[in-house]
Amino acid sequence: MKHPVEQERGKKFVGLPEFAAVCERVMSDLGLEQARGTVTNVPDERTIRYYLAEGLIQPVDERQGTASVFAYVHLLQLVAVKKLQAEHFPIRKIRELVAGKSELELESLLGIGTQAKRSRDNEAKRYLESLLAPSMSIAFGEAVEPEPIKQMRMRSAAAPPPVPSSAPDQTAVWQRLEIEPGLEVHIRSDYTPPTTSARTRSLADRIRGVISRYWKEK
Amino acid sequence: MTQQFPKVELLTTRAKLEAGREQTVDVLIRITPPDLNALNNSRPALNLSLVLDRSGSMAGEKMVKARNAAMYCVDQMLPTDRLSVVAFDDHIDVLFPSEPVTNKSSMKNLISHVEARGSTALHEAWVRGGLTVSEQLIDKGVNRVVLITDGLANVGITSTDEIVSQAMGLNQRGVSTSTIGIGDDFNEDLLLPMAQSAGGNAWHVVEPNDMQRIFEVELQGLIAQVAHTVSLSLIPADGVRIVDLLNDFELTDTGRYRLPNLQAGSPLEIVVQLRVGAQAIGSSLRLLDLRLGFTPQDARAAEVLRQAQTVEFATKDEVEALPINYEVVKASQFLMNARARNEAMRLIDVGQFTEAGVVLGASLHATYEACAPLASSESVMEECASLEELAMSLKDRLRDKMSRKRLAYSAHRIRTSK
Image 1 (tube, rainbow over the protein chains, first blue to last red):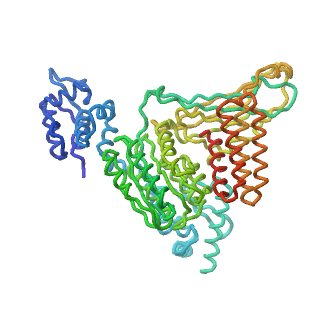
Image 2: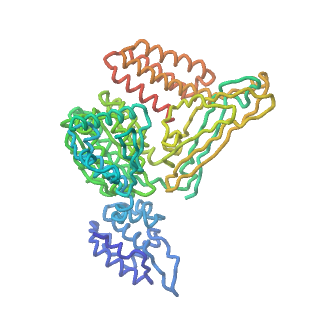
Image 3: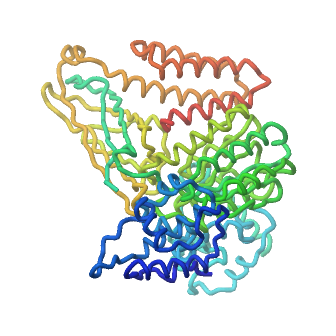
């Protein structure tokens, strides 16, 4: 679900009354509970002025006539202040955490933007998920599921190499290289070869294991 | 933020080299990362997963101290950081997924209920911890799994090579791993290379009471990290050849040395030994071209710094009249001592304890001799005390496993200037 603040991304709010109204709507959608009686749950114009004076919200640098033009960053700052107040942070600490922070940092503080990050940054996640995939057991000599080997046997030499189900990146390019007549390896473009002799030995052992299991099954 | 490059110094034992003969020359490459104040930058945001062993062997003081250290970690983090905690034995529980560190009391409450039981599904727990981090990657922040264990991986994938290579793969995708081994039963041959290949730190907690201090150092390191994916290539001039790089860094796929992440306040010292052909008196020679690649913490793109080292050649008398730079001598000696520690480990593995003691004793003697003018410096005193203690510990045959770990971790610290 989208954070209520996100709907206001990129918008401008002309004048304090309009900004206060947006703040009120966002805060009530958010439903933050302020435990202390001295802290208002929904900030009014006076509270916003106080936050500006205290440096909790950065100064407005754009104007239309006499009206201040507030931006998305001001809204993020205000919501971050209210969130941290609800979590009993003192004003001094809140100022430290909010002042001078970028939109991205404030969004991260509010837990916004996770969905966008998921699609962008998840090479690491895909990789880890592939490590948990059952097909990994082939690589470690445990109970072997011979399916990929059988598939290889049925395919003609001209067929394109398969993309294993555990591939972390479906867009990666596979290349097939002949080791000797009758034996090929398929290498994905993002594959990293072992860098130590111990790991090279271990890889060679696993390849030997796969080949000998193939012969046994054949 | 203001972009600042690390400072690179190339130093030889004496400012000039002797003309007219072939010689081996130690070059100290000191890489000093920019400090955080100079960068005018607040610390990077942290995205951590603490992967905490709660197997049966952790019962008692170890579990209490590990819980306390994890709670200490919560206290030190900012609301702009993210934290998840995974507890594992043969079952794996994500105590809480990656969250901004705002509700510290509930995080600490969950950690306080972790109790020791069961066996050690180390690999899957590490993967689960990595998943919590990767689901919430912080752009330009430090995304890291901290694996805390006292035992051996004995459930699921247990192959050292495989886990190490997976940790390296994860680091290449933006999530590093640090490892904290507790006591004398864990597998240092897994935890050390795992952290080393995964861009993190390897720590050994000898006594449970050291746990909090180790956490402090790890957190300080994370906060001070200014660059990652650091690599070094060295191109010797014609007539010069690289004999050895004493730090024994692994090579990247492109044949460069893979260096540890750069941390403000922690210069990295590397010693390369060159074989230099005979040169004429008064001539100068460009010994070495250096290329340092790194990705600043607040950037996505890698930066490259290039530097060259040129030296002059003079008569023997003139060279001997020049002052000796003992920093170069010390760095070389300490790195040789790291190798001696590894040799001692190898000897322990084949049961040659006396020989291992002799190797360490020889290193101690060589350090006293080479670093005599620096004998009162803190680092030399510490190194000599460490060698002495290691040699002594070999005599207590009930603590063989601990001796081996001490050797492994102290060698690692020297090689990586940690």
